[in-house]
Amino acid sequence: MAFLIWLESTAISVWIRESPSLWAFPFILYLHTLGLALLAGISTAFAIWVIRFAKTYPIAPMRQYFAYMWLGLAINTVSGLLLLAAYPAKALTNPVFYVKLVAIFAALAILGQLERRLFVDSNPQQALTPSVTNKRLALAMIALWLVATGTGRFLAYTHRILMASEPGFY
Amino acid sequence: MQAFMDWILSTPPSYMMNNVRWAWPIAETIHFIGLIVMAGTVAAFDLRLLGVAKGIPPAELHRLIRWGLAGFGLSVVTGLLFISGAPDQYFYNNAFYFKSICLGLMGVNVTLFYSLGFKRILAMGPGDDAFPAAKVMAAASLALLVGVMLGGRMLTFFRPVTVY
Image (cartoon, rainbow over all chains, first blue to last red; front, side):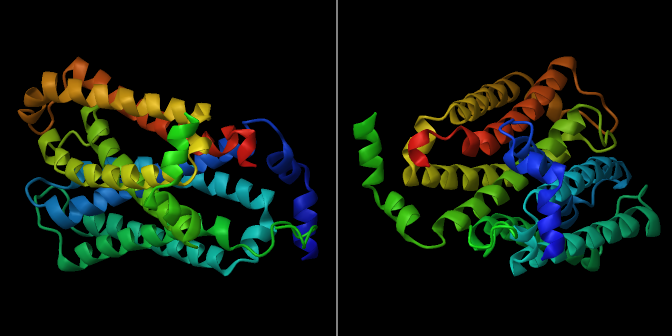
């Protein structure tokens, strides 16, 4: 708890939390939504493609979308860490936050697996129907993004502590 | 306006949003899931028109759009639930009007796209470049998506004082 109190008192944490500027907490929160749309959105579209449509054309060109997904991951890593710095106790004392993290890491692991299996281990220059395993992986990734999204929303409603330095203040 | 808001607050959806314990976060979750599916599928198609994944014909990627429409439907329904739960938070909120204008312009853009250029897009094969007007509409679609998300996220910070 001492670490959380220290983190809350750092200049960056205070600025994000208390600045009246729209460039502080509101803009960082917006970036987190933008990153969500890029990462979870485009990877979900890609997963639907793998499950439902990928068989007529070689899949190789679809790899270009991964650059946008990884851009979304970069945006959300930075914005997520900044949001965490603003209210560390709110997230770190809430079990829902850890469910969100596990869902995100599992979804990312599957996304990496899909990239390797579809573009490296098989021949992406040939039109192929994705294997049942790859389709199941794609479906699991969609489910994990749904869990990550839901837990992200529920964080605002399930925290027990907002500030470690003000334990009675929700 | 007050009478209209009072009527909204008297409807069953409004009652549900204000009295069922987890209604608001569940609706928010569904709203965001709708956003993810819509933004992801529409962005994938728009990016193709702008030159990404050119080896896939746009008509193939357009098959994703029906999923995007389903996502949009989820977001519209849950968005209306939010308004029913706290109409003053939206009707006296400039971020809501910004978001609504972006949504309206998206509608205009989509109508133009399907009435002016869709047949030419469907005829495109692998490797074909979209015609300039289609690229402009795809870029506008992406910009308006970003605008809708910006307006949605800023709603909280432009709420009227009465809400606090």
